[in-house]
Image 1 (cartoon, helix red, strand yellow):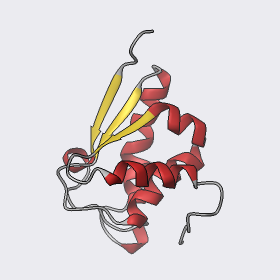
Image 2: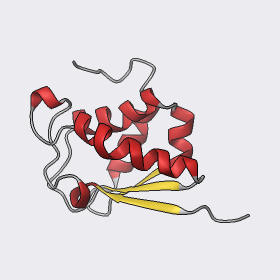
Image 3: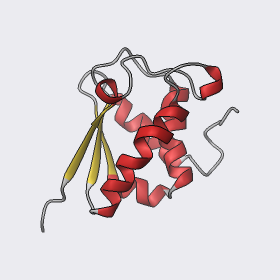
Image 4: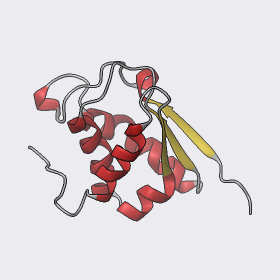
Length: 118
């Protein structure tokens, strides 16, 4: 079985070391901005070439639950949970539990278990 290509995205390097709130209306460096300006494009590139997008969560000053849920749960709401699970993975040596947390937000994206505040 061939190994799938990996594309890489480090949030601290390409977006912000200080990820902000859920929506643009709430402040700078929001998850909504990240999703719309960076994540969607990179994710769609990964899907187009049947690759896995490795999102590196290291190098920043922490993530709020609302940022992670809006960015990655939002991605699953715009694409599909199955597609997101098949084409994304996460790396965090600094906070390894974040990987499982983000996959939970992805899985709950359409169930209503994640509270989306707008």
